[in-house]
Length: 208
Image (cartoon, rainbow, N blue to C red; front, top):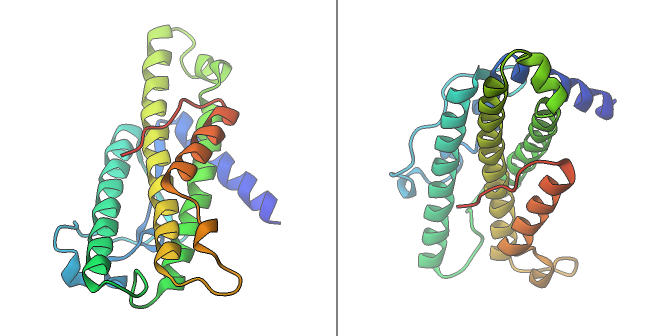
């Protein structure tokens, strides 16, 4: 059932991308600022205010690229602010509460990023681009470049989500089953995402 659901989700995203529309996360899939102490996030722009039944909405591709990049900037700023606050405390977990909920949100975000990247790979296939723009090589190239930019924005969001999970784990004292030495470093996460992109035939992502 999960495999069918994933395939249906990828097919829906693929169809949207062929119509120059791209999925962006609705409020339910974004790390809400209310989960963290709001006083430490004065620099973070307010997140999306509308809801959607399956956690995503579709925007024109160019707008989606800009919007995802903005979300990435906000998420990175939020994570950096929490890390700074944790360093000032000198000890304790990264978040004072709702850690499990934050990890779950990040894990769901990573799953969505993976589905989107698979859909981007399908649409970027030369045959599909030729069907979309049969009479214009220039339009094919231009649209492929947009897809590359969108894919890189998605990869950046995935990296931030993985980085958040790893940072939470590194800030938590290890128990009998968890070792800080087993936690992936930023370099490991980047290498893993780059390898995944290579296997999927996508351009290498850029990280901030």
